[in-house]
Structures are given as structure tokens and as C-alpha cells.
Image 1 (cartoon, rainbow, N blue to C red):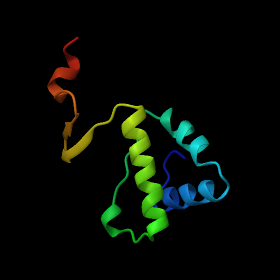
Image 2 (tube, rainbow, N blue to C red):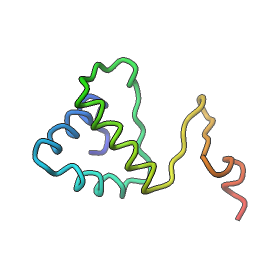
Image 3 (cartoon, rainbow, N blue to C red):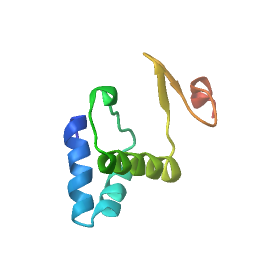
Length: 88
């Protein structure tokens, strides 16, 4: 799914859920270290697709580390600051 647009990504979540393969897709996506999703504010989703998207977010949050963009060039992480990433 590399380079997939947000609309296509949400459609893929719905398609995999309809086939009973959502958990398999989540496992596959968990192998990708960074997933950037843009322009969600412009996307109209029905309740089912909203639920699928937030299941995806919850799965990422529970299973792997995550960071959140605050502003261009600024990332945050729930456990430590970006500046500490190089402190090892």
C-alpha cells in the first residue's frame, strides 16, 4: 500500500473488513514503521469507515510506537522528546 492516498486507504480498510481480513491487514501494516495520513479533515466518511479508521489508529497505538506531527518539522512522542531520540 505504499503511496496510497487517504481515500484509497480507507476504502481498503472497508474492503478487508467486509472480507473478514481486517486483522490480517493490521498485521501487515504493523510492519511499516511510519504511516503518514493526510487531509483527513477533507474526507467524508460514514460511521462504518470512521470506526474502521479508529480501529486502525487504536491498533497502531497499542502495538507499535507512534509519533504525532504537531507542526511542520516538529514531532512528538508520548514517552520522550524528539531531541532524546539520539541520546542512546
